[in-house]
Each structure stands twice: as C-alpha cells, then as structure tokens.
Length: 301
Image (cartoon, rainbow, N blue to C red; front, side, top):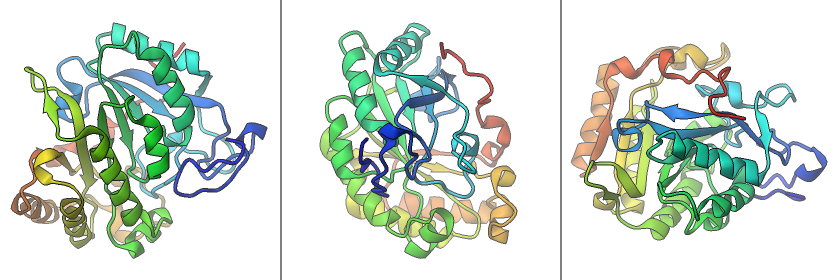
C-alpha cells in the first residue's frame, strides 16, 4: 500500500503513511460490523444467516449508496474498528462458530492484499465457504490475489452506459472494468455448485439493482453479462430494493423515488428472455429497514 493500485482508480496513495486513497481509507483494516446477516440471497443466507463482515471505505462511491455511513466523508474516515490480519482471521472463525453458513466479505477490495493474508491464516480451520461481496469494480490483477481463497463471488454489475456510470459513481469505465472482473471470477470458480440444502458452495452470483429511470441501462447490463459469461453457469440476483432514503438532495430527480412495477417487470422479462436463472425481489424489499445497524458492531472484539 505504499503506492496503492488495488482498485481501478489506481490513485497511487501511500496509505502506509496514513494518506487516504480514493477509497478514503488508510492502510489499517477497518471493520464496521460483523454479524449473522439474514437478508442476502436465499442460497447465501440460508436458515442461520451469512457471516457478514462490513469493511469501511469504498473506492466506487455511488451517490445513492445505502451503506454510505461506511464511506469516508469530508476527509474523515467512517466508523469502524482497526484489525490486523490475525485479528481478522479470528473474526472469521468466531462467525463460523456462531453458525454462519459462510464468511461474507462486503466491500473489501481496497484491503485485498491484507484480507488475502487473513484468509490464508484462517483457511486451515475454516470449513465454510468464503464470499467476496463487491461492487464489481475490480482490477483483474487484484482479484488474482484471491484465487484459491474465495469460493463464491457476489459482484454487482451496476451500470452499462459510461454516461450513467459517470453521473452516479464518477466511473465511466465501470462496465468494461466490471466485465473483465466477472470473466476473471468465472475463470477462477467455474459453474455454480449447490449443496443438498440448496446453499451455494461455489461459483458466481451477479447482482443488479434496478434503478428508477434507467431501465434501458439495466437491460443493457443484462446483455453485457450474457455476452461475458455463460448464463447457465452463473446465477443472477435482480434486485428491486432501491430506496431514496440515502440519496442526497443534489441527485437527479428520478433518484428520489422508488422503482415502479413497470420498470422492474420490464427488466425482469429481459432477464428471463436471456435465459438467466436466479433470484428476484418483491417491491416490499425497497425499505431502509433492511439496512444493517452500523452502530451495532456485532461480533467485533
């Protein structure tokens, strides 16, 4: 991290000196919450919950992010507890002991090298799958640090249009970068595998959040995924959970409402026509009540 190039921003910040990169974070691994989480896709949460570790900071920074409390704002890092690699490995094992179906690493890309070392420490004892839960905005070179350490990739594919990606995340290269990342994820893991209880044990599950006013971009995203990966070897989670509760006042007007049934159903029909299998959400999912309480650190020491 003396010249951080972990994420596609490639900001080059010397995070070892306390300088904050594009992610807004120094070199220390900062964790905001670790707990069993019941609100992931059914083959991730199962009956006991996913052992979710929410890392602070994010290199993408979408303007409507429901986890914005975990992002650095105004030069001040968000809440969180600093852990070293051994402490993080021990946290994984505590989650496993608590009954987690898997270890679910949320937005850890800007700590990839250190998280990989923590996973290597935990692996001899850890007997449950590891999930890499990310924005999809990843460097292929960074993902290769995780080869053999991650069992399930759970990336977003948020935007296709460079104009939309620039407006919502200042990342006009998002689609090309994410498509390359998904190809690397699939190269590492291959086709999805499930256990006898229907829990995902290996493979790639791609998420797409349908946004208000951008259904055509959502359909373009689905086509880009289908052009990149064999749809029968992955699963799709088509999400309807967008809520404007976390959208700032200066955002485009259409982001201050929920997705309509027409918008979501139009994208869903396109997904079915392309042959995707996976998981779809009811309109009741669009509620801030499903956002974790980051004032509760859960199993953090």
